Image 1 (cartoon, rainbow, N blue to C red):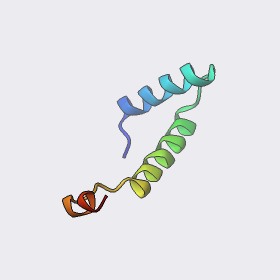
Image 2 (cartoon, rainbow, N blue to C red):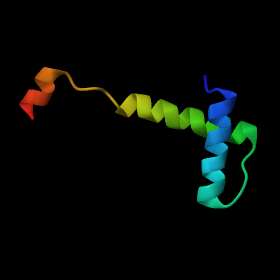
Image 3 (cartoon, rainbow, N blue to C red):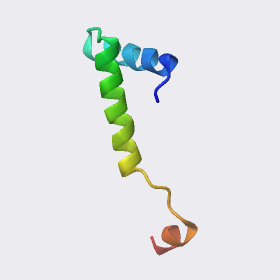
Length: 53
C-alpha cells in the first residue's frame, strides 16, 4: 500500500517532470505499477552470486 505522503511525493515529481498535475487515482495507479515493476526486477544478490561476477 502506498501511503498518502508517498503519493503526494509522487505527484510532486510527476508535476516537475511533465509540467502538469495528476489526479490521486491516476497517481495511485501509476505509483502502484512502478512499485510492482521494481519488485519484479530488483532482487538482491547473495554473496555467492556476487563472487561469481
